[in-house]
Length: 155
Image 1 (tube, one colour):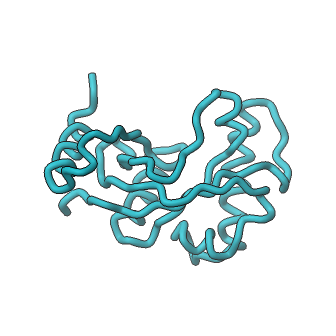
Image 2 (tube, rainbow, N blue to C red):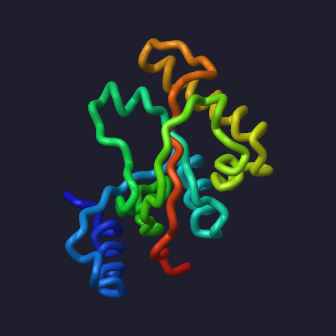
Image 3 (cartoon, helix red, strand yellow):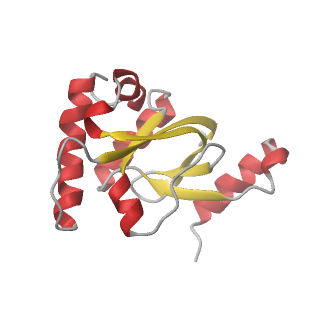
């Protein structure tokens, strides 16, 4: 059964943006826990978070398509409720140690510094790699995705 909040968000968005009526979308939440998903979703709603980073290796293992410019995303909170519609504006795959200060800032987390980004993402990616019995290193490929929010849940 499809999540009703996702369907409602999509219908509300389509009413206000009829040119996207024929496009498809993907729905997902940030992070690996309810708390992380809620925290990051709130940063999106506040306008602070306009980028995200993910583990390229997991896309390969799951034979999943990478995000791409023009992709429509319905962002979910930790309860799986739709909070925003966003469009991917750019995607770049770079080694972990080459993620830029600008990207770290756009992710909107903590003090928005590259040092903070590296600390929290290294811990996050290490957990993901442990789960697939691989080792983290600072050259792992990272999917750096930027997006713009097109529509938000009414507060």
